Each structure stands twice: as C-alpha cells, then as structure tokens.
Amino acid sequence: MELYHLRTFVAVAEEGNLSRASERLHLSQPAVSAHVKSLEEELGVGLFTRTPKGMELTDSGRRLTVTARDALRRAQELLEQAKAMRGGVTGDIVLTRNTDSDFLRLPQLLAELGREHPDALVHIDCRDSYDVARWLKEGRAHAGFAYGCFDADPQITALPLAMATVRVVGPAAWKDRLAYATVKDLAAMPWVWFNERCPFVDMAQSLLAEVGREVKTAAVINDEATIRSLVASGRGLSLLRDDMIPRGPMGGELAVWPGGALGIPVNLAALARRAAEPEVKAVMEAASRVWGLGEATAAA
Image (spheres, rainbow, N blue to C red):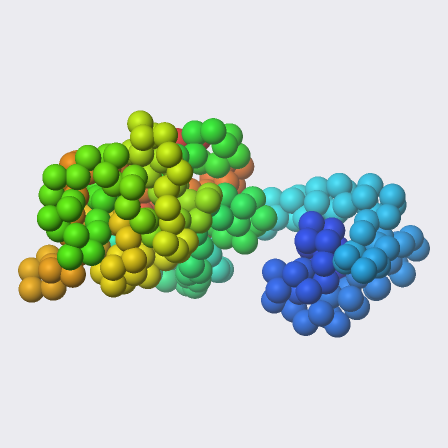
C-alpha cells in the first residue's frame, strides 16, 4: 500500500468529486481514478459509489477514511521528526499571500529564508484572506498571510505583523461630496463591495451600521488593484489600504473621505498543530525578523 494512494483516497473523500480532487493533487483525473481502483482492489472493499453528483463514500469507505487520515498524519509526523534531526529545512516551503508582495515584505522574507535555509524551495500562492484557514487545514500550505482576526478559530495560530490603515475612497470627481459627507451620505452612495467572507465587509458594515440601510453595490470584487481601478473610473466608493492610494502627480484619480481611518490586522497564520514543524518555524522566525518583531510569538 502506497501513501500516495491514501492521499488520493482522502482527497476524493473530502472533495466528493474526481475533477476537484485531481486539481487539488495536481494529478490527471485518470491517475486519480487509477489510485482509487488500486486501493479498492488491495483492500478488497468498495470505497466509493459513483453517482451523477460525484463520488459518494460507502459505509466501508467512510470508516476507512478516518484510519487513512490518521496514517497520513503519522507519516507526516515521522517526516517532521527526521527533518528536525537534520536541522535546516531542505524541502519545499509553501506560503500563500493575500495582497501585494511589497506590502507583505516578501522579497525581504525570501532573502531571509534563502540565507537561513539555502536548500529550501519556497512556493508562493495567491489566496484571499477568507480562504487561508481552509487552505492550511487541508495541508496545502505551511503558512499564509491574511487580514483579520483568528481568535475564534483554535486550530489557527497567527503572528501579528502590523495594523493596516484603511480609508474610504471615491472617484476624484466626488471630492467635494466626500469633503463634508456624513456616514449617512456614504451609505446613500454606490459602493464597490467585497466578497461576503472578506474581512473588509465587517469593517464597512461597522462603519455604516448606524445608518441601518442596505448598501447599493455597483460591483463585488475580491482584488484590491481592481477595486482601486473601478473606484477611480467612477463606479462608487470602497475601502482601500492607505498605501495603495496614489499620492503625488497621480493622486488626483481618487478622493479620500476625511472622516477618519479604519484599521485591520495583518497576520501570518499557520495551523496550530503544525507550529513546531521546521518549515512553519522557519517562516515565522524569518517573518518576525523582517517585520522587526524580535522573537516570533504567534497567538493561538
């Protein structure tokens, strides 16, 4: 029995779909099907029932999934123990980023990891803040940058990096309207809104809560650069990180509401139970140095 057969089995069980499992595992769909078939033949039981909606676990498959997850976890623990004995990280380090690299100091972080762990290969994926926890729990990344707070999730540990300043912005043509606008006035204007799970939604709703009316949305976007472009083109108001608001000669494309700034935490998050793994420790320690935090102290 091969570990990759178990990984495929668990992935199909969790996704309930061969296509999604193949994307998750970076394998072809025929290869995933072959892994499942081989495991079923070796175990002598059917693991799935194929339905029009996808792959449904049999009773045997449901019970064996628990054991398969435990076997994979123990195999990972064995690898991590061996890595710890060797010292430095020699394999892959997988990170996710939620915003632009310069703001997250990724060039400096990569340089730091390169000095401390020259044999490690860092992979960086783009992932929205609201998706980071799921990505970590599925074992797809060692750590991920994200906005917001993780206090309510005991499975996640987070290293607080900074508090980002966020402002209400509108098209340059609305400068006079925004100069004396109340919160009620803001709520009456159209907004370039955010994915419903985005941490920026909570900020915007808290700001507009006193008005008690539904915001008129001109568009729903989950990319900050696109939000900035749409606001500048006249589609509506939105929230934008202060450092993303053009200054100087290009500053005329946006108007800033002078009513005050908002703040949102910026974190580097990881799975709490994996905090002692060499890859996670390496990233947390490097990020702590790059952000000038001293010793890495993550909050569960």
